[in-house]
Image (cartoon, rainbow, N blue to C red; front, side, top):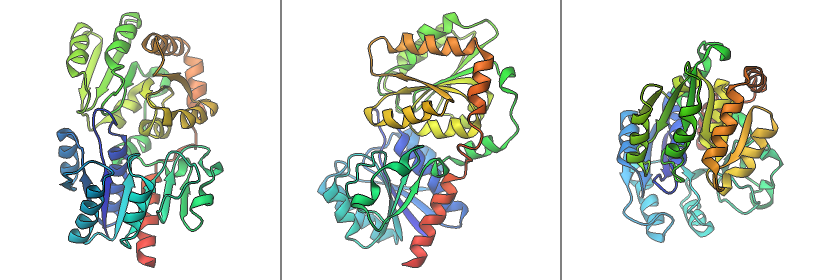
Length: 347
């Protein structure tokens, strides 16, 4: 089975679409299949990461979601003999999706909205806790729905970290800060500024930034100022390890949410886009994380205040971690890959 993944990444849209596709691509490989990516926008660091995983990358010289993009995506699928396409992104309109479906390819689409509109995919994935309550059947009566945390797609290294033995939460002295592959709101540097000077001396900050971060110079400058208590990780392939060593994480909501849940690390979740808010609220309602809107004035100060309050209360963090038992088991990507293989086989 050869699967084409169509997703983009960049400073304005982040890296989450590509990273959750990577999780499924790894699972496709584990099942004996072949994965390749097509992208209209992809930072070099992410392209290198895909290629290092044995995944071919094809560049599309067109605006994402345009008619030329649709033609190019169909052509790449035909040229490479892809049996299915995995689609992840908000820039593909209904006409575009209908056009792709018209090629006859099996299509699996990630969706975070659940409005009931036609998605034009045989398989639809939404790993949000309450995704099963959304009106997907209204516009997609025949699709196979892969909904809820059981389908949270985790990359291999995160799955391995989730399965491995971890230090007890109370013994972990690291506080992880990460705002995704691009940090589109530029929160990393100001949050460090607010957080680092107020941490207890025995605690260090692990700050993870992606290759598409737009204010890398500012992040590096503030990291240098606090280098005695801060470790900066650029494009790390060991994010699962950092999560497993953290007693608390400050993280952008989105793809990382499922990773933290699987590993069992309580978090301050920061919404950096409107489409993250509902799923983040659902996660907060489960009791394992605190939610801070990142798009509000004074967000860095509020994020630091909430994180420091939680760090000072180990019993609360333990109670939050205990709420994570069984929410995400780490096998979502494998389930998605198997469902995709079944769809291709039944064709």
